[in-house]
Image (cartoon, rainbow, N blue to C red; front, side, top):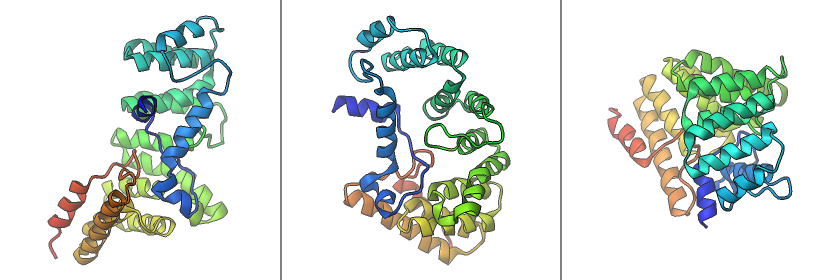
Length: 277
């Protein structure tokens, strides 16, 4: 149990792939898929165990060649031990030995350290390995991760541009139903920050089609309606968001729908109470 708790604390990832109804529910959520992906990644070689005694794992790594991947593994162990300074040095060293490590290191800066400037630098370097192609970090399009970094730095215009790379390409090729609803939500958040509520609402309506019981979608639909001075519709959206939040909790499901776009029951209630019909 403690090992799983450690995984959840260190790697609260969200997957950007659009799945059918079973995958859209929290019963088999993309959070679990991200955890499984990480376990497969770090345990794919015999003798390398992510869980266990960090000192024993570090001693084992001392016997292996100084490759980018092995140095990255050492960084993970140092992170588990709480030696963040050494961990960061090792993460940086891993990218010098193997440029493909830029993707993983970018994720660590973005999601664990909230260091958006360094995250963007590493994602740019990773993306540059294959020019004119929207890489992935294993699951997420790099354009999406770069957009999150730009948004974290407060540059919503650039965030929208980066969000649009993956969204628009997939939408044009396969249709809106293939786009992860969370990607629409993320772009909508930046559009709302830019005061472009009508465009945000368009994204959120598409997101609602891909997940009809999303508290996140309904909350930001409420935000869009509020900006558009449509209070009755805003109230309805916030009430739906509150209902879906409480339903998830009553069902014993995770109420954190997206770790990159956090939402609390208190936030929904405050927004609802602030609406003046």
